[in-house]
Image (cartoon, rainbow, N blue to C red; front, side):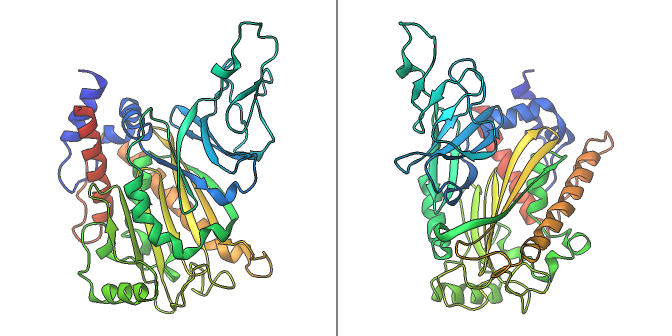
Amino acid sequence: MTQESTTLALIKQRKARHTLSRELYTDPAVYRADLEQIWHREWIFVGHTLELEQPGQYMTVQIGDHPVAVVRGNDGTVRAFNNVCRHRGSKVCQDASGKSAKLVCPYHKWTFGLDGKLLYAGNMGEGFDPDAHGLKPVHCAIVETCIYVCVADVAPDFHTFACALRPFLAPHQLANCKVAHESSIVEKGNWKLVFENNRECYHCDGSHPELLNSFVENHSVAGVSDGDDPQLTAFWDRCEAGGLPSHLLMAENGQFRMTRIPLAPGAVSYTMDGKPAVRGRLDSSDVEDIGALLYFNYPSTWNHFLGDHALSFRVLPLGPDATLVTTKWLVPKTAQEGVDYDLHNLTRVWIATNDQDRELVEGTHAGVSSPAYQPGRYSDVAEHGPNQFDDWYCTTMQQRLEA
């Protein structure tokens, strides 16, 4: 059997409402299939345009086999390129982020413009054509400051997702924000375990004391129902009357979801006391207690938008047993650290929560790697979210492997 047929057989063996098999989490061949069928084909969240305000500012990411650089051009356009020199393949932009008037390869000083065109290549001879040696472009799309890239030759539809997300994010005025803090951690576990863990709070009571000062999971928004909770529906109606889209919206194939949820009684932000972490409002409404707007988009991001700040989370696979999780705290651009917010107060809850989730993911990866592991049954009450994620993963992989 080929590696593709073996992976397909494993996916077809999954029982309904059960976790994945050991091999789907740990086998290098399955990880290779994940890269080829998902990560190298989907739109992947990179960051925010507010991080690239000036020409020459760039950020880099590694998407499976593909190093990518995202750059603000002199014309103001944000573009993405394969971060690979057209000479001998060195990475052109070596740092995670930076600013440069031109993109200069550190190896032999080939120099590219911010639009990717080759400007200088020394000692290449008379027959060399610089126009044929620009940086190779990568698909790049933006919605409400959120930058997505796709390394496939032909990118899938982005318009449907963008149209769904735009009205939810617009009231939060992200273009007027800045990154107050950024944190990256490596979780020694498969990327699917990272997302399964994110998609439920069944584990929260015993693992996330800081988060539970403000966050309350609502099973009605796990991705399988809408409107079966009268209190939640009333909360949605109140927010939408104030101009904040809130009712659950989910892609037909389950890849993305947007919705708003109330926080714990008396809480308005992710802080230890539930009080605002940042002075002033992030959103443009006058609605009190707007809770948290949540959106995810598989396979690379989940996000939280509150009344005073926002958090974006980016997931990137590093191998079958390692995942990079990057968190960014967004605050109004005019907010001053030490005056309008205390950085420790702003970040304490999710720095703790991320580290707790890291331990859970790493412990689970160690367990599912055991020959004694057998796929377990998801709760019919508290684990709709991870089951929904696994359904999306298996359906997507099966359709593409069969094609």
